[in-house]
Image 1: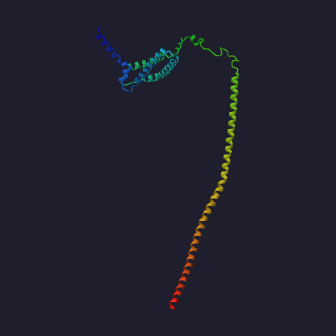
Image 2: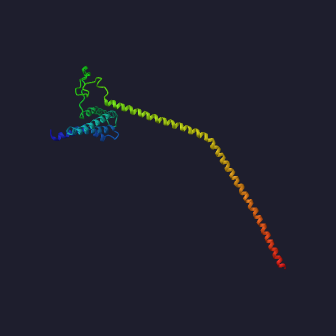
Image 3: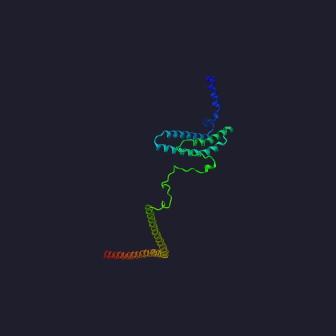
Length: 266
């Protein structure tokens, strides 16, 4: 078999299985295929998480390793949350997809949890249960250590001097707080009583204020009437005074005329 035949067969095989390529399907199928987009995003996130795991494996700084592993665990949890969405989208019929392709999509989604869990994140793998009756009893964990060195008697739980002092201080502060609240309550009661007394006094003053308003209105009306009468009186006095002056002037004019007449007659 020549090299040309090998290349030809490889090309035929690639074209035959090209329909199973998620990236290619995402480019060929219409933009409404949400499964292809979401699966491509999840797949790229898995690859990124694997690269971070490789970085953590080669990292020498323990703090950096812990931070990277924590980020990987968060990404794994987020990716596992996307699996139910992919399961719902995998069974959704899309125009241009056959039943065989839908089955392949479902198998791809079923394989995702194992791929995600296989990403190293620095945590110890969970032990697999054998399913027998003996698996129900857990073996003693010797790596767990207690600060009490196994002493759980009554003496261990006796209050210390520091805890007793803290509790006494807490009780004193609580009593002071209760006293302060009592003082505030008394002050509020006093304000409430003062407000009630002020309201009653205002209710008693309302009739007096109404009476004062009535008297002021009456005084204003009387003042207006008095002003009108005074104006009329002044007008009358002015007119009578003018009449007297006219008579006096007329008499003076007649006297002058008589004097001139007598002089001219002589």
